[in-house]
Image (cartoon, rainbow, N blue to C red; front, side, top):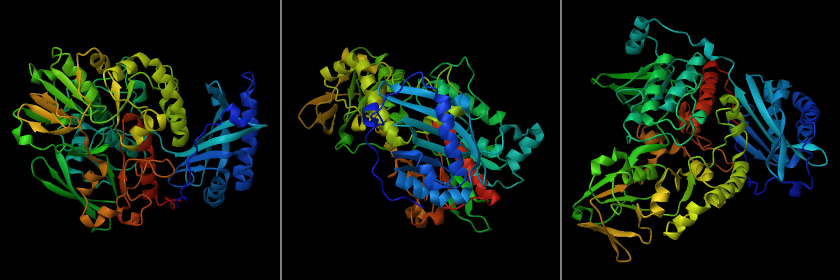
Length: 598
């Protein structure tokens, strides 16, 4: 059951708003223990009214599968009580246990504090965990809750095969898979290893020659944008001596090794050409074509689309008179190394996470005034190291699985408000760079409602860039900037702008992104199912991702028509976390215990 549209909170529970303060010497464990005892009793008794008596009026409750078989964020006691009254009798939570070693007082800002606690419990369908945060009023009340279902199986259940048996199985697939995973990037591998841990037979179909080629085939100097501790993969963390920002080629080899270590079933050099309603008692018929032209049709109940955050369709601006231009025009996806363009005048258009590393790499090879950056819109700027949660994802941080639960336990509406504060702190730290960029005409903003990159990532993603040295080069004039007009058309020697100015170029690189991820799904599905596929990326009215980590029909009226088609995408951290949720839902379907989505 989808909830009615709710107005997301626009304030944090500060001391001023609550009319309270916090003594830093309080016994946080004793407070949490007393509150949790009452909470556990109310939940075990399925007494929704008693539960909400322990919550603030402006409480949040985020559920990931545990009590809804879906992803929901409820705001306010009335909505939470309705949800609990409906769902507690169905799932019968029991054996609630507080992990007192994970209880603590947290003060992220001087006017903001809460007691955070972690607990586990069981439901009628599995094990689950929860996180609560108590804020100080006359007594301590819960302001935010989060709970998620977890697996009952463990990676130790992944058994090996002999080399001969493995080769035979990989090629012949004598046992029909239950799940086809479209693409073998990080999301596909994560889904496969999670499913294997749960005893579900899955086959990855990868169009490239080797696992990892989706990273090998990009520009040579690509590296991860987040620190290595944020990007561990399920069951096998990166080595402790890896670079903080691993290069793409290193990651590519890791992905290939990962598939071998876990003996995942993979067909490389193979394309999925269609996914159509099944005809042999299964939901879906998946037709694939191997590199040698052989075809095979798999009949399965589940297909996981692990195709990435965008489609393969490149977005190229429709600028008039392109045929007149004597130079080269290429999309950033075709850029490999700066030395391919030595001695040429280069124009790089637009702003994205990808654009600025390309720009700074080019600037290292070209003398001054040979490279011009031409942004289309205002953007949010920050350094690679500026906005990382070092306490959670760091060399000395908590275990990754716990860090994920803590990080994702915050409702996105609250995270946005916290990021507004963090963004101001970062802007002050980056003041010299930001002032320098504005001085030379670079148009900057602070992200949506001043929340930095966070909302931009979840909604677009785009409109921001991560500085790897290009900003200072722009300030110093080593990278020229043209940000004072819209392009009117090509000329034989470059570009003409609407204000009459011109820009000469030998090469114009358009870093203008790709099509929407949904396009890639529609290319494989029959036209009659296209309307059933809901938006994939972006946020719904509750602040949850639209169709990531769930079936692509979402809450649409035709969701049943695409039941069994799943979406998984995002960076390595998101894929690590949400792959477990996809695998659990598929396992529940296969076992016949998946209930009705709430």
